[in-house]
Length: 286
Image (cartoon, rainbow, N blue to C red; front, side):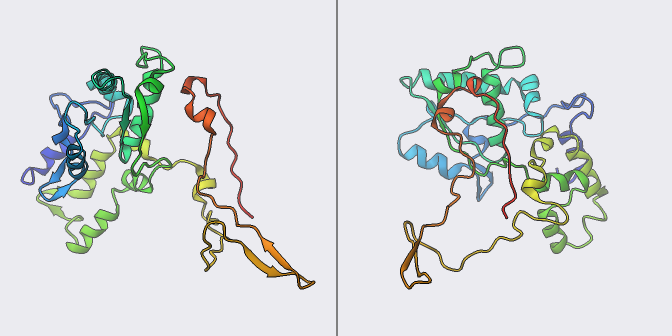
């Protein structure tokens, strides 16, 4: 409530010790397809996708919106709300009531990381896992179409932990200078926002991963030394030039990095329990 901002911050914060609800406070995510169709009137989230799927025959018994409390750590969503168990049960129900056809999952943003956690959890033995066995994902999931997944994390997570500064905060400062730094409605906004977001364990899942090899350091960036050619070659194009003797010399098409990481078909189709740990090495391009 804009007229009671401190009350809102208090309800959105979690317990610093348990990472769960504060005593006497209970905030839960809205469930069902209406939970994420529109954020506010005129600002859609999943509404267009839901409407288009409905036009080609999908309905509530063939679609399921997995709502979860994005403030909690992934495992605590199971501890408090049994969210992972609910996702498992709903996927099994969808498969059973649709002729054994496996599901297509469309996670978005942090939901991509959350569903990766689910796929590991569901095949792990209880009590920490769902006990579905090593072939559960292969039996129930046809494909996963990730949208905007932060696999390497997001720098905004670090800024949020340190100072609550972010792009949207910078925009707010430009629109209303000094408001965020003043006692707006009796609320020192950034200080209390920082105190609130630091109680959200889910923030740690968004911390950038990969180290200096991916992100560089103070003196080096992965883009250093990279030269972008002005000419865009078409597929199967080759460069032809004259060598020292005047003969035509064909240069093969340069290597394209359309797939950065590939595990091969055998690994891609194997249950996660059968995949051995692989040691990856990244080298700086000279």
